[in-house]
Image 1 (cartoon, one colour):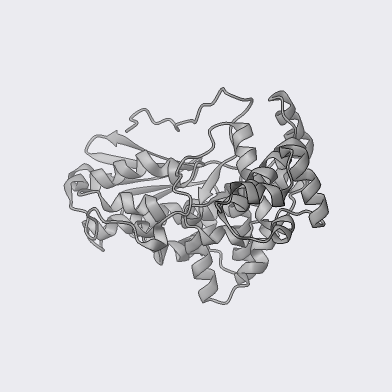
Image 2 (spheres, one colour; image 1 turned 90 degrees about the horizontal axis):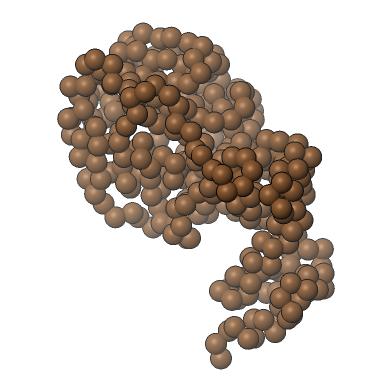
Length: 351
């Protein structure tokens, strides 16, 4: 718990610059689910935001955070819903947010619930920070979402804020309202009629959002919680809950995410990282690597994995990885491994 009123910062000195932020699919799918119920063309919006739809199959898959912001803005405009963040939050339980939600279920009191969220939020979204301040007999719950100013980030901020407040209402009573709510600049225009904040006093134009809750409520039990095993829906196909901790590793992860839609040109990766192509090239060069090299290495790694662990036809592997034809894939694979894809599969597959 932080009592110094400062936004925690993620530090990394392995490579130049901070990593590109990611969020788990499970943090994002409530938005998809809500939009599907009202007939919004989510597949079209995913393509516009450059989010491969295939990532949604795994609740713990990593999705670049800035394209999520872009998707939320596009969806709000498409559906004419300025209060999209509120609407999503009102139909979401934090207990359903993948492995993160399962961990929250293990809390027995409000204080444990908040502390679990603070400790593990980085495993759900590397671009989100939670922390607490003690102000006399009240606790201030703070949140900060990294990223450029814009409607999408504000929608995500409101979604996060309202979801937290609504979860606390489950534990302390449906009539409860925060004593005070401070809204990140821009949020005030995207809250609809503001009724979701109840009788809270409001302060707008802040650099991050927060709300207060009485210290005396920290011992309230967490209703509907209790340790429980994750369902199949919440089980990750990878079982790896780590986040990229440096810039190069985050670009590698970005490439892997984008490869689900074929070869990702550097302009696509740069847009997803919220920077220019030139800046991306420069920052990679400062770390001693090239974008082309990262794409090639990760294409071959995925190919090796699929050749080893699946019966996917070699032609399908080539197409999935964005090669124009199977012969180009075979040449690239042989150049990197010294062996053809067919020979590699024959070598590693038990007879």
